[in-house]
Image 1 (cartoon, rainbow, N blue to C red):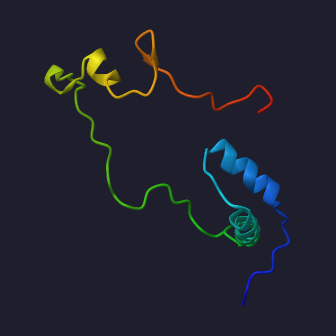
Image 2: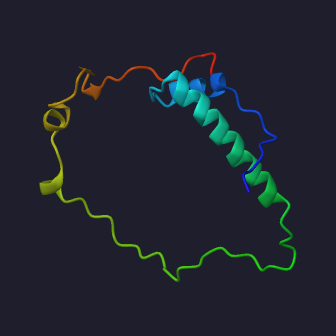
Length: 107
């Protein structure tokens, strides 16, 4: 049975998110993504209503353990500053120069 969305996600919101992520999307993609996001939010709302009071908390299910090692720098694997910046589109004062992605109006 298809999920009937009760959440409203506008195509303008989708376009804004895509712009923040620097992902170009078309008008038709923004409309479809708005519908898809709304459906996803409806499913999340359904999950929120699940009775989990009797379930034990699960924090780790794989059995993997964090194994650490001493942090040793292998200079033979390191780039020089010049090598690191060799293919940079733009650089300034020894750093990569990239376009600004956050505006003062974004909060």
